[in-house]
Image (cartoon, rainbow, N blue to C red; front, side, top):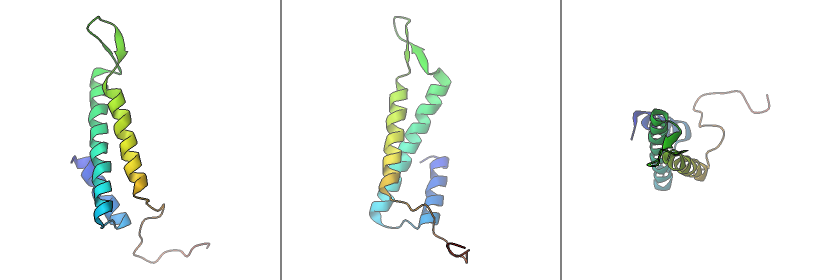
Length: 98
């Protein structure tokens, strides 16, 4: 797991109190997909969105589809976590509606 993904892991666990096995597996899936998406983004940034094939013709970078799929997997796993919009709060806060 990348440093960036580990940072997300720590923040989401702290903010939402995810502790059950299913939630942790969904988090792992989401962050593995996140890392794959970032790897693809780096390759596309390095190589360009269009590359030349063996016939010297431009075509979309093959990792664009993998990046798209990894993003969709990440978002699907995060959606399955059913995170509330408000993270857990330990301290005293402003009452609702005030």
